[in-house]
Length: 211
Length: 228
Image (cartoon, rainbow over all chains, first blue to last red; front, side):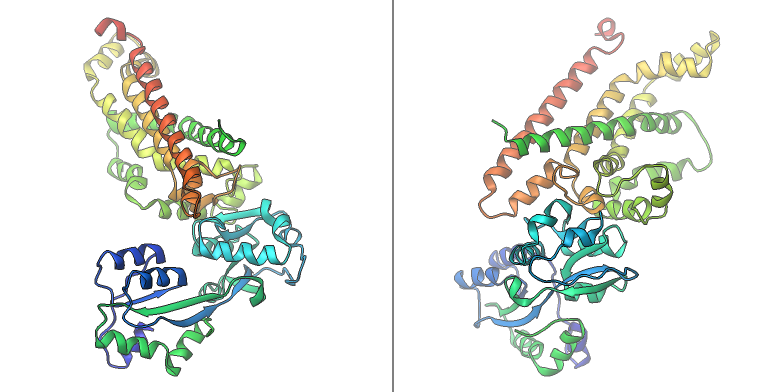
């Protein structure tokens, strides 16, 4: 997105990547941030309660939870209520972001619980430190299956999407965008651009949906 | 006092840390001796290699371990064919801890070996002792405080290992979830701060106990009573 924005003749935005919690706390502590993009709407609300938002937040993007396997795998899994994931693992482990610590893992747990598959697969988890570490475990073939966001799966050629979890099986995965109180005209223009139709084609190419 | 789950985490952490020290200490003593007492081509390279885990981010070390020793890694399949598997096993956690703590152990042992007057070892050789005997009866006992310190540092670093472990073998309860991994998970759960705090206090107690043991070991080193 930053590249598309630059191609449109603007100065490249300076991007600070980090956990939503850490970034929100930094903005609250006075870091010179103008725009906040987060996969966790709770942290945007948190900033709103502390009166740091210059405009109401927008729900910019949505993501899906997918079951992935190494690209060469021939495993077939149909995600349905009561499906037997442990059997599909065939003795291997299911790579997920740690369900206690990482949002992607919490979504995975919610999806598996609502489908009645959590109890059966829980002893076979390989809880990773973050969703990209879970992706790496499947990409390297250490785990025969994993659960990540669709955008992660598309970014890694060594994995393939086996199935997509039904949207209703987990809380919506929505990314919010909020202009912060220090936002200048350039930040406002970028925010507008990020939600525009040409930007949407870029987001969609990377696997995002729109809420 | 301790819940079954907490006890399991503590026991696993101790096993991992002890196995890590047991695996790294003999190699570290050999490498420290090479670096302290021998000149050979590639010595600087070996020194740099030994220090690599100290300089690299732990996550990088964990990823390199995965690439080399994972089930589909460079050496993984060959090791698996002789029954050695690290991926998702406690042995992998011990290996990650051993690799991460290795530079600290080598440094401590090497410093105490370099502090030994080479003339003592030379005298041993003059009196007809073979090199191995000089090493076993002079170098090792004289380097004892450094060896104990190195073992303690290695144990402490292993007990605290996080990044390489979670990247290499994930955080599997009962298998690879050691104290720091469990504490991290609990700090991320709203309302579980109490659990995290209990485990943190346990970490402190374990560390203090390790320090006490090493003090005691240094004091009772061979010959300590005489030069005290």
